[in-house]
Structure formats: C-alpha cells, structure tokens
Image (cartoon, rainbow, N blue to C red; front, side, top):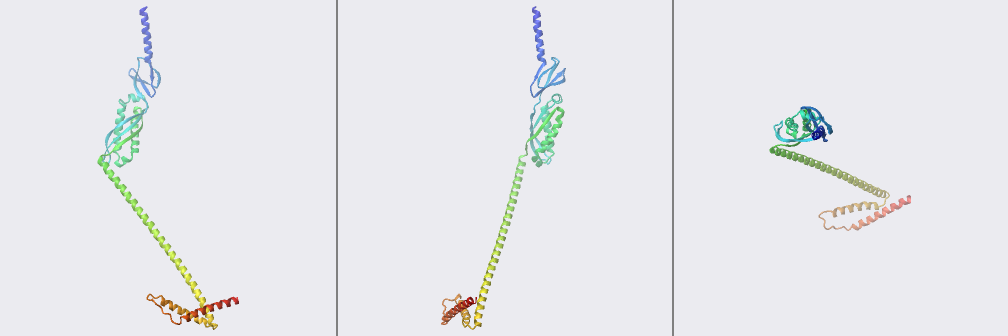
Length: 309
C-alpha cells in the first residue's frame, strides 16, 4: 500500500509538471517561436498558449515593439573629396517573428552594419554643400535602401535619421569665412540700395521744390502783370479825363501835366544815392496850387457826371 501511494503521488506530480510544461503565457509586445525536434513549428502570440510538453520547446523570444538602434559615428568621403564624420539612428519593428529568428543570426548587428555601409554609399555620392543642406534627401534614400534590405529578415524600418554631420575644423573655418563674406556682401548691397533710394527721394524733393518755386514765380508775375494792367487802366482813365478838360478849355488840366512832371523830377532828384540836401525852388508853391487845382478839376468832373446821370 505504501508503494502504491508513493507511485500515485509521483504520477500526479508528473501530470502536473507536464501540464505546466505545456502552458505558456506570452507577454504583450512579444512573440515566441516554437520548435519541434529542432524545427520551427509555430509562433506564439501574446496571451495563453498550449504546446506539447517534452516534444515542443520555446526557440526565440522576439520583441515585436518598435525599437531604436544608434548608428556609431564614422568618417565619410564626399564626392568632392571632403572628409566628414556622421552618425545616425534607425527605428525598426519586427513584423515576422519567424524570419527575424531564423533568417538572420544577430539582428541588431546586421541592421547596424547595413545602415553604416549605406550611409557611406549615399553620402559619398553627394557634394559637401548638398550633404549639409539635404538631410531630408539623405534620410529618404537611406530609408528606402535599408528597408528593402531588411524585408527578408521580417523587419520593417520605419525611420532612418542622420543625427550629426561634422566637417573638419579647417573646413568649418573656411565655411565661416565664406558665410561672413556673403553676409558682408548682402549688407553692402542693401546699403547701396538704401543710398540709391535716398538719392532718388532727394532728387524728387528738389524737383518738386523747383516746380513749386516756378509756379510761385509764375503766380507772382501774373499778379504783378495784373497790377500793372490796372495801373495802366487808371492812368489811361486819368489821361482821358484831363484830355477832355483840355478840349473844353479848362486851364487846370494843363497845370495837372506840368505838376505831374515836376513831381516826378523831384522824386528822381531825391532818390539819388549822393543826395543829402535838396533845395526846392520858389515855384514849389505853384506846384502845390496846381495840385489843388487838379483836385478841384476832378471834383467838378465827378459832380458833372452825377448830374448827367
């Protein structure tokens, strides 16, 4: 009886161990490969899975989440023989666990070396200026090449990014001098354009000032001409009035002409630069009386016109 009890306990223990050996719980984000007698049979997905104990065994545990792999820095010679150092980063994801487990021995090392060789190939086919300004183009070319090469390994490369491109120090200094020269050139061009605009504005202002001055002189000349015309009309009217008085036999009209000439002559004498003292002749009182007679004459003529009206 004791032997039979021990046998039963052993049998139960074996059954329990067998059941535990056949139950596999795969965590989220992973897939496990199952091998039967050393040959791949199936991939276990996340969750509870059953296998045949002692016949099937777990082969590889594959991470199915997107991963990142740093590409170490390396020297690259560009098409124009410039030496630069470049490094990068690769984002990838396993889409077929069986291929990732059995088509490539060291997946991470394989992706790293593949990326490094293609970085040299892509960047070596470009000039330095194109290399420094065309990172998007480099990333796109690398992604296309690396993704196509890793497809046989069941790996999807989602992004390839160049992190840093470092030219030699002497080349960096030469580029800095070139950029400084370009900035100074642009500054000189802008300054010249500013001087030209300022000169144009000054010329336009001077032109406008000349036009306004000419218009002012024109207006002044017009007003002076109009004043002279009115003065001439007034003198003609006065002359006509005096002439009519002469025709009518009034002696005061003759006195008007004599007095006018006399006064004009005195004005010329008094306006001389060397004139300090002017002697008036005794006939000045006669001139005054003549002016008074003319005033009376004009008054009489105005009265006559009013009566005629």
